[in-house]
Image (cartoon, rainbow, N blue to C red; front, side, top):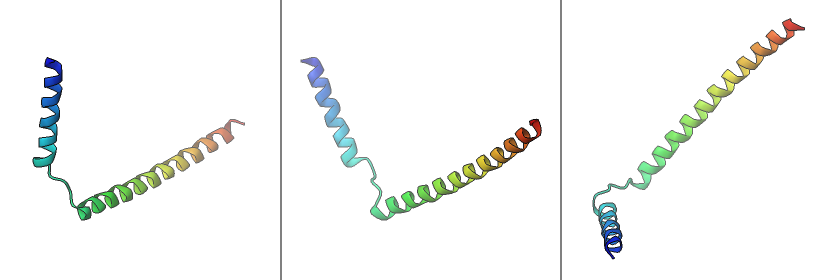
Length: 67
């Protein structure tokens, strides 16, 4: 029964912390953060795409010299 009491206490403390101590973002803050992540992800994917294309072109050029 000691473990059940420990689990119950932990759950109560977790609920209390989530309810009273955590500052939840507003909808506007959440949308702004999501947009920043979306734009950063798109920019990063375009950079990776560009680097991949450059490396592929260089490798193709090197392979053409080997023939």
